[in-house]
Image 1 (tube, rainbow, N blue to C red):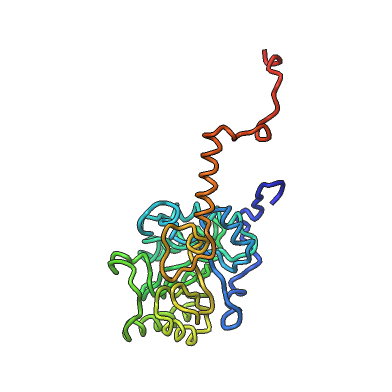
Image 2 (cartoon, rainbow, N blue to C red; image 1 turned 30 degrees about the vertical axis):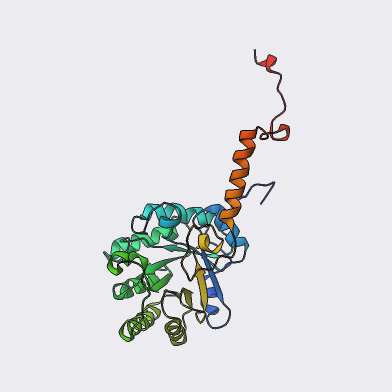
Length: 286
């Protein structure tokens, strides 16, 4: 920050302090921290705070674009927000979410969309909501030089199939499938796995079975790392899921500040002399 203004110097250079290798090296050794960010100012704050990974999640559909689900989010939406985040991030690894139907339909389109996030918008990796259909795609992307973070358990892009956002892996067959998929995506080359909304003992079993680091959200304390939506973490959301902890009260602070602004304008106390430019000699204009 210079003279009260934030300067974003990285400008999609794709050269950051934290690398995929740094993340994988932390598995079983040092906890991995990941938060979402969707714009440059937030990314700048999260990066300065020392977070290892910034996820530009398709959750921006809910947090930033006013949608009820992530399904309406497009590749263009993601590209715009990924670019904003990468321009503000110097240290953290930036991972771009692949939105609904941007991958898995056909290989060529999947590669093009994932490649765009790295080549044009400066991301370091992509995240896929995974199932049996993404194992081969993960391997192909990794072969092409696109690091992949796999997302298992509750995958919000399947909201219509689930009929909501229920906890996953709650019976033996479902738990075995998650463990099998985790192993398959590790073998395919995924550098990390997100485990969402699954029983903590299942997350612990998956973590113990893999060398690849696991990052949990609603999956208990035994994962190699944790991720939250930044709006939930800082208290900006009006509502947050039960597994999210609020570490601040940004919404209250913003409401108070905006209320003070409205009151100051209406009362005439703002702008005061110190907020105004000196008078000009208008006779010189004519």
